[in-house]
Structure formats: structure tokens, C-alpha cells
Image (cartoon, rainbow, N blue to C red; front, side, top):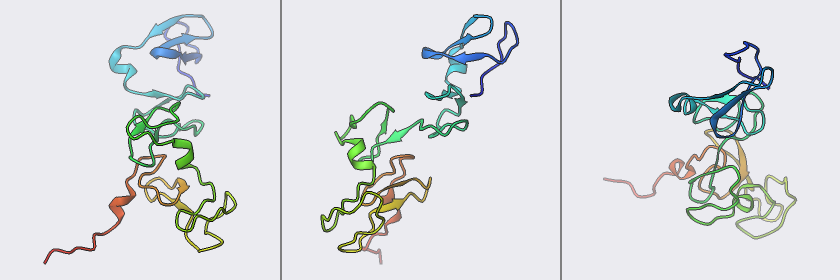
Length: 157
């Protein structure tokens, strides 16, 4: 875990606490970030590393910092299991489970193509390369709208 340097003792033992507060684990000094500084980074819930505000994963440990509803694309808080916009169950929709959306056959969880009909079961997001269940409209990791990749059948003259 990378930590910040303490302004009081100078040691690199300043850690982010809940609510944007900082604590030096060496000398015990406590600090509060100015509002403009607190908004300038996003602390990782796993290691406390300060990341860019719109980062989707921690650059220090790789932990997830953001998630999106795979049905409607709404931004979700990490602890949310259900989308507060459309009510979708995040875990049931986002993780590949082997279920085929086309024929209903239940394949093994890590199967990439349906054993019964050959349909793709796991897709890779073209924006962030996260793997997820096929047939969803939005990437669970970055919120990318897969519908933007489809071309309309109707063409203007």
C-alpha cells in the first residue's frame, strides 16, 4: 500500500480514513483535507491509495472502484447489490453463469459458447476489456453502452 507523507513528522505514514480524514500512523497527527483536495482523488476501499476521481479500478492494487448497472448503465455504489434506477440485481446480471440467453440451456459457468446452440455466452467490453455475460446493454466495469456498436437497419436516402 502506498501512503502519503505526513506534514507534521515527514514520515510516509499518512493514511486516508473515512470521511476524507487523514491519520499519521507514526506520530498520531490528524488532518482534514480541504474540500477541493478531497475531491481531487478517490481513495481505494481496499488499500487507501489515492486514485484519479473517475478511476474504475485502483492503480495500486487493482480493486474495483466503480461499477455500473449492466441493464441500464446507471453508476452504482460498490456496496449496492440492486440498481437504484431500474431495480436490476447486479450480481445476477453481471457475472457469467453459463446460462444461454437464446436457448435457455445451462452450460458450465466458464463456458464461452453454448454447448447446445453455439451462442456466445461471455463477451469482452471493447472499451475496458472486462468480461461479462453476453446479451447485456452496458459494461458492468466501465458503463460502456454496447448498443452504440450496433448499426441501424434503416438508412437515410
